[in-house]
Length: 564
Ligand code: TEU
Image (cartoon, rainbow, N blue to C red; front, side, top):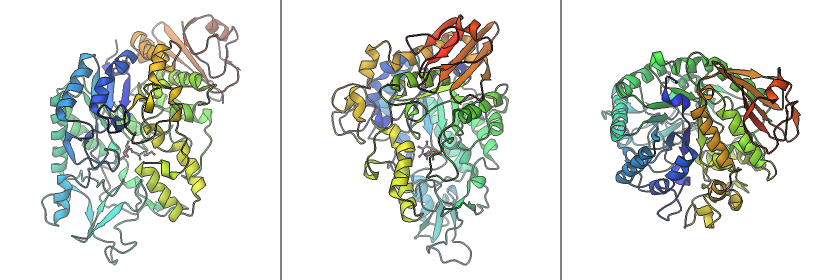
C-alpha cells in the first residue's frame, strides 16, 4: 500500500467552457458537468481538476478572476457548485479547484482600490512603478523595465489616473499580485480555506513559480528578433518562492488530510522540483514541469523543431530519475494550453489515430507519477483544422500573432503554421459527446467550433465499442489501481538511443513490468535483454489484435505491458 493516496490516483482535467452546455448558450457550464459525471466515474478517474469557474470578465477564459468566492454566471451558481461537489463525492471521486493567484483580474475589487490612488491602503497589493528614470510616463519605451508579456506587448500598463505603471506578466487585464505584502498572502490563504471548508479537495496552482519576484525588477536580455527583454530570471522561482509555498502549506493545509496540491511551474528544473515536492519540506505534492511540451520549440518561437523520440525520452527519463527517491512526478501529455497529444506525439490520421492514442496513454500511464488526462484525450480527440487567424479565440494566439506580424516582421503563414501545431484553441474545441448536432455539446451555436471529425470521434460511440480509446484508458486507470508496481514500482529506461521505441521496466518486490511503445507506423523489433523470456511473460495489455511474436516485434504504434 502506497503512502500517499494520490500516488495511485488518476486526475481528469475539465475545461468547463468546452465540456458540456446544459443551459443552451453555446458555452459549457456546471450543470453540464453534473450531467456527465457518470462518464468520468465509468472511466474510473479519482480526481477532477476544474479549470477556473469563478466570476471573471473572461479575458483569458477565467484565468482572470474578479471574485474568488463566487461562480461566474456563465457557469452557474454556488448552489449548483455544491450540487456538483456532492455528485463528485457520491461517486467516490475528489475535486480540486484551479487557484489563480499570481494575478487577479483588473476588475477585482482589490485592483479597483489599488489603482484608485497612490496612497490607497491596497496600492501595494500589486506591482506599481513610475516610468523609467528620465523618461516621460506614458511615452513609448518609458515602461519601468523591458519585460514583454506572455500574450504579446510590454508587461507594463500605464495608468493615466496616478501616472504609474502596473506589472502584468500575462494580459493587461491580469495585474500581478504583490506577494511581498503579507496582507495579500493572508487574503489568498483565507480564500483557499473558504473553499476547503466548502468541501473541495485541493488545488492546481496556476504559475505558482512566478509569485515571488526579484523586487528590483531588472531588465531582461533581449533575444535576437524579439522586441522585449526576457524577465524570467527575475520572476521564475524568485527568491521567496519556497518560503511562500511553505507558509501557504502551514496556513491552509495543515491538519487537513486527503488533499492534493499540484503547482504549475513553467521552467522549473528537476533539482528545484525535488525541493518543491519533498514532503518533509511541506510545499506542494507535485508540480507540472514543461520540458517535454517545450521539446518542439527552439530559441525562435516561430519555428517548429521536429520532435525526436530520443530527446523526449531523455527529458522524461531525467524527470523519472530525478524524483525517484525524493518528490513525485505529475505525468501529462496535454492540457488546455497545449495541442492534442495524438496530433503532437502520435499520428492523428484515420489509419493510426486509435492505435497511437492508446500507445501514448500506455507510455504515460505506466510511468512513475500521477497521470493527468485532459478532457477528450480519453477519446483520442485531435487538433482542429484552423484555416486562418479568424478561427482563433485564444488571447495568447491573437496577441502573439499581432506582435509577430506587426512588429517582428514574421509572415502570417509562418505564424499560422506554428499556431496550427501548438495553439491552445486546439485543446479548447468542444468535447465530442455524440454524433448529434454540435457533437452533443450544445443545442446552440458553440463558442468555438466543434471539430468536424466528431461524427467518427465521440464518447457515445466509444463507450459502446470495447476496442475504443475510451475503454483502453479505462483499463490503464484500472491497472494503476490494481497493480502495485504501477503506482509504487521503480523505473528503469531501456533503449535510450532508439528513435522508434519507448521502453522501460517498473519493478516492485517480486513483480516486474515491461512497457514498450512503438512511435512509428512500421513494425519494429525490440532489441532488449531477455526479449525471448519477456515475449512469453503475461501480456497485461496491448492495443493491437496481434501480440508481438517471440522476437518481440511490435506492430505499427503498438504498445505492450508485460508482467513477470
Ligand atoms: O499558463 C501558464 C503558462 O505558462 C502559459 O503561458 C503556457 O505556457 C502557454 O500558454 C502555452 O502556450 C497558465 C494557465 O494554464 C493558462 O491558461 C493561463 O493563460 C496563464 O497561466 C495565465 O493565467
